[in-house]
Amino acid sequence: MILKGFKDLQDYLSAPKNIVIIGHRNPDGDAIGSTLGLKHYFDKKGHTTQVLMPNEYPDFLHWVPGSETVYRFDRQNNQSVKALAKSDIIFLLDFNALHRVGDDMKKTLERYENDFALIDHHQQPDDFKYMYSDTSMCSTCQMVYNFIEMLDDVALIDKNIATCLYTGIMTDTGSFRFRSTTSKTHRIIADLIDRGAENDRIHSNVHDANSYDRLLLLGQALSNLKIYPEYKTALITLSQEEKDNFNYQKGDTEGVVNYALSLKNIIFAAIFIEDKEQGIVKISLRSKGSFSVNQFARKYFNGGGHDNAAGGKSNLSMEETLTKFTSLLPNYKNELNQSYEA
Ligand code: 5GP
Ligand code: MN
Image (cartoon, rainbow, N blue to C red; front, side, top):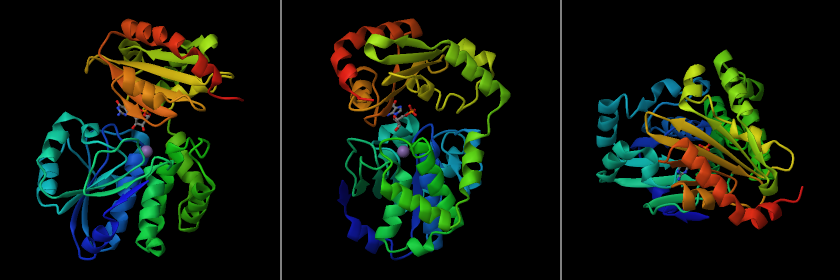
């Protein structure tokens, strides 16, 4: 755990400030929940805050309280640049390095002259003036709760803040089932429910928001599933054409990789999603036990993440990417077979 400059930050925030809060490119539930949860808290403390996201995020997150106030850097570029220009400090949430916001936004942030504060649970964070980094945390939302607790303000957590933080903890833990979920996570969740988070509605808003096309796309993905039992590995592919056939929308493939991991005796799962527009194959990796997909993604696919959930990309064709992936598996045969004792 790294906690850097906390006392100075606390002093700095004792007077009203103009604050910009930023999440990573392709924001997920934890990025949306943590940025908006922190925004509602800062607003209550008398600060002026603006949340910026690099690009769009899935429909099933648009109901999160405060979502309508978010500026998208790609779409509302003028407003975003103005908000940055008049800000005193930038909070970076749920990502570890500036490149995770994408090239355009990164260039703007690199010219920023005031300070950055990072709250994040990804490995190998870059260095910023103020930092709260803890890779053992299940979610950035849990860290925002801890941050508010460190500032002695848990009593200020209201229904909006509780709803935002619940959402990110729920999505980043796969509904409280991944290894990173601790008794402390459950205690925080209990407190968030006491403070107004309507757990049944939050689950339903996120998980029961499928379109018919999304379910058919899932059907296509599952029919493309391939299993490599000797490596305890399963993979799923989706081509651009298949995505187009089912009117692919942002977020439609979220969680699909977990179906591969749900197979008995599979501890390494991958999904390869072709993106013709960007000319890449986007890769999501998941594992159980000690096999680190973070290291695998960093080493071979220009990515990163956590030990059991990571992502990356490939500039090769789908076919070449799959060949590269499957030809790497024999090198990890022992590790994969020893990673997890069921
Ligand atoms: P997902 O597979 O759900 O997109 O991402 C899983 C985890 O890996 C997330 O924590 C995410 O931040 C990280 N991740 C996904 N794609 C990339 C990538 O291209 N680069 C890096 N550094 N991390 C990624
Ligand atoms: Mn997260």
